[in-house]
Structures are given as C-alpha cells and as structure tokens.
Image (cartoon, rainbow, N blue to C red; front, side, top):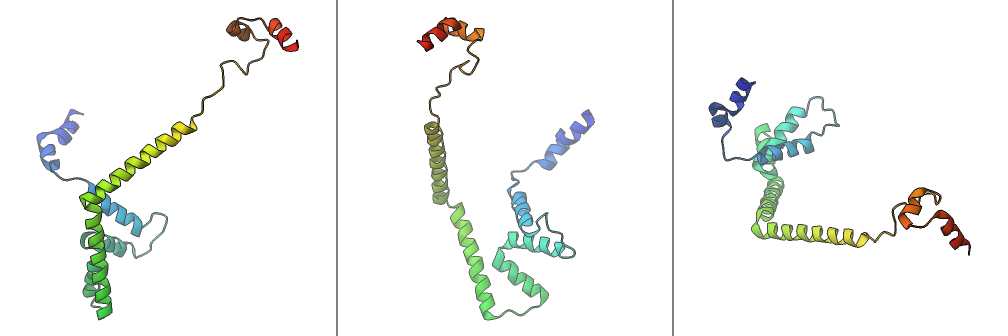
Length: 162
C-alpha cells in the first residue's frame, strides 16, 4: 500500500499531475459527446465520425468546423453556404463572449440569489403553525393522557358529558 501511495503522491506523481489547469475542457468535451452520441442510441459505423465532429466543433466552433469538414472531404461550398457558416461562427463567438462577460455573470448571479431568496420566502410562508400536540391521537384511556394533562380520564369524560 505505501508503494501505491508513493506512485500517486510521490514527487514524480505530483510533478506529472501538477499544473494550473482545470477539468472544464474535459467536461465540455464530455458534454459535447453526450449530445452527439447519446448512450441510448446504438451507432453501427458512424460513432467515430460523430466523436470527431463533436471534438472539432468544440475546438473550432460550429461554422469553422463545417468549413473544415467540407474542405477536407473536397466538397465545394456555395457562397450562401460560406455566408451561413460565417454567420453561425459569428453567433457562436458572440454568445460565448456574452456568457463570459462580467456583466452577464453578475446579472446571472444576482438572478440566482433572487431565486434562492424567493424559494426561502415561499418555504417560510408555507410553514403554517401546527396545532398538533403530542399524544393528541392516543386513546383517551391511556395513562399518558392522564399524566400529561394532570387529569384522570374519568374526570375528562364527566366534563365532556356535562
């Protein structure tokens, strides 16, 4: 066991895994793969192409990816297709910049905080005071009622009849 820990936590292991990077790129690639290659669908031959297309789109954007695929396959593109792919790439670039801008992130955080506050407020309003008391559903002849009220069941019965 100490040898295994040294492999992972030793000087060489730490040097190999040391870096100022995050796993977000891996998560983005996995998300793209899940959207293009869902687990509930069986692909006979196209899975390799789908994976390649998903990664190419993640790395270059949708417009540039389509242009590269067409160029690589030797397919001619009309002016309208080129314009469409350029516009698609521009929209994608704009939406990425917009999502990452500080003002958008601030607005998103403020909206999330407001949503949390509203949920807490709704929960507090939904919590009505309960009129339940301990042993209220117990049989009236039980000894716990007489102990809790300090009154015998016979006295309670006489009081309720009169």
